Image 1 (spheres, rainbow, N blue to C red):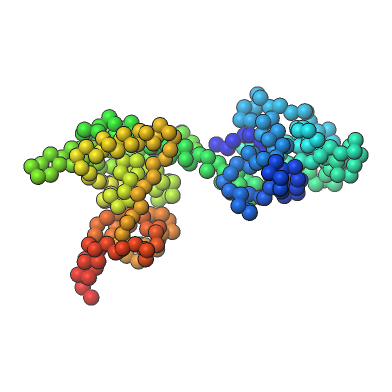
Image 2 (cartoon, rainbow, N blue to C red):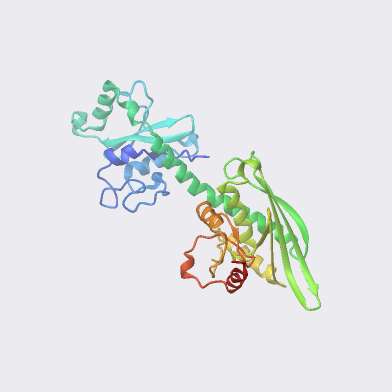
Amino acid sequence: MFSRRARPTLRVLRDDLRDGWESGRVQPLAGVDGLDPLSPLSELPHPIIRKASESFTDDPALDNHAGRIRSSKDLVLLEIKSGQWRGAVWIDSEIDVCWLVAAGLAKGGHDDYDDFYERVQRAYESGELGRWLPTGDDRRQLKRETAARVLPDWELDIQRRVLVTVRAISTGGTRAFTLPHPTDPARKFGECTITVAQVHESDFECDEVVIEVDLADEVRTSALGWAATVRVLVAISPPETGWDRVGDTYSTIGELGSLGYRLDQLQAITDRGEIAQSYPNDHAHYTHRRNLALSSVEGLGVRSLCGVYFVPYQDHESLPRCPTCEQRYLALPG
């Protein structure tokens, strides 16, 4: 799941790389001073970070380093060089990730106190080398970056599956497809069944789409489960209030031919590698305050008095009130 490519620890960013940045200033730590906390640390603009990233990729057969640092006798540290910069890379075999755990300059024929090799020697003799290894904060940062990389690809995969499925039944029919797990293809995540019908009545014609989402128990009430469901819905019909829900079944209707037009749009978006975006709710709806609070926190959808299904995340005070909701609210017994 994790990228093996070498990445600096937060300690290295904080203590070892105070200069040498290509941006001309000290690079801030992840999540500080405007640096995107989801930005891969392996891509930060410093020569020794770039060298580490190039030397230790996702293919171990392509590892390229100057050999083991001899002064680190207990901990296997592999040396990399970029100009005067030196770095020590440690491979975490448990999760197969390479870490740049120390960096510095080669100085004064290796006799200078601040020389990189002298620092490694002192750390070994004092037993400090172990403190250079990745911490819990480092691993949490790695997980955040991994999620930022994996989840968009996962959502795009779901979108492609929706596109292929609905294309096959665009004029009518039922077809199911597997909802993939974002990190482990062997794990069951769920299944989605889509039914398309073209309604032809004397005074009414429409495209009707019904979606049934059957999630595995372990993800049924999770944020990931909800994200997968939303991705299916938005791929077919972007308006957030355009879907009716009964349990795990969702339905929507549109003008006859609108589904084919949407599929052409979705094809173009998917071909560009983009994730379809929803159209936000344009009215303030009435719903139960308890449901509203819970849904705002967990990102779940709620049913309004007028019957639409929406995810409350906008400031309702900035939106015009839904006239149907207001009418039904005023009709409730006092």
